[in-house]
Length: 231
Ligand SMILES: Nc1ncnc2c1ncn2[C@@H]1O[C@H](COP(=O)(O)OP(=O)(O)OP(=O)(O)O)[C@@H](O)[C@H]1O
Ligand SMILES: [Mg+2]
Image 1 (cartoon, rainbow, N blue to C red):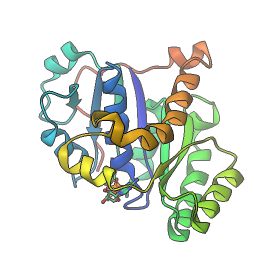
Image 2 (image 1 turned 30 degrees about the vertical axis):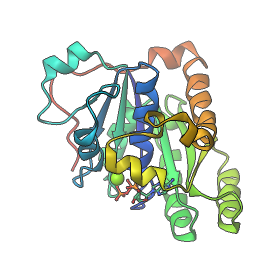
Image 3 (image 1 turned 180 degrees about the vertical axis):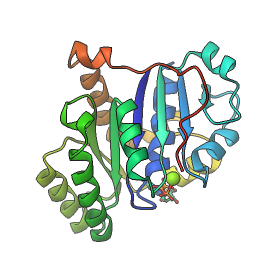
Image 4 (image 1 turned 90 degrees about the vertical axis):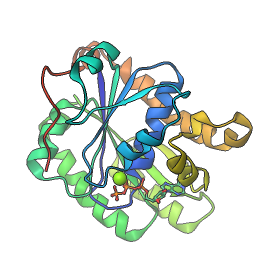
């Protein structure tokens, strides 16, 4: 099982939007996905509860999850949607389990400043330094024509980290959030621009998976008991 951690200490950075649409993207390609929602607001968990039964199944992993059912489901991907106030110990633990970390950032100077500090902390982590975890930056709610989008892009370039995608600012995301759907569950005629925007993320993940045998060997398995306990 590959583990994707979605994290940014800034509230409203787009973590749950990225987590749920990523889950929808993987599920739409017949991948078995489980979401671990560490946020007390339970945005991703509530999204899953609203998800129409006819859509590709995505499981939730929380303290109420039937572990036998989860094991039978056999998740290939775990997406961890985090909250804005991750403690250092929790961050370290989650990084030790993750294969990917996606950091969504809004095009705003407040968000950029908060994220700059977070990226320094990520850089100091031993699992990041050893290359076990691949970090990817994601622009949230970005309109490429705006000056702030350009500033976000130059911040990304200066960080030296891979820039994996820019999620357009679109009403489709709050609509999907309301309906328990992802853009991958909508008719293609409505989502052409979005799917194009998401393709670099799809390609990046595929590229990372094939980049080395070590990376593939580092995949984590479903633990015997319970969920990750994070305050
Ligand atoms: N690309 C987008 N286009 C339009 N609206 C968006 C987009 N991405 C996120 N939003 C909206 O921005 C708000 C914040 O997004 P989201 O809840 O995903 O952030 P978050 O980082 O999970 O927040 P929190 O830190 O509170 O968990 C939500 O109302 C969401 O619907
Ligand atoms: Mg959230």
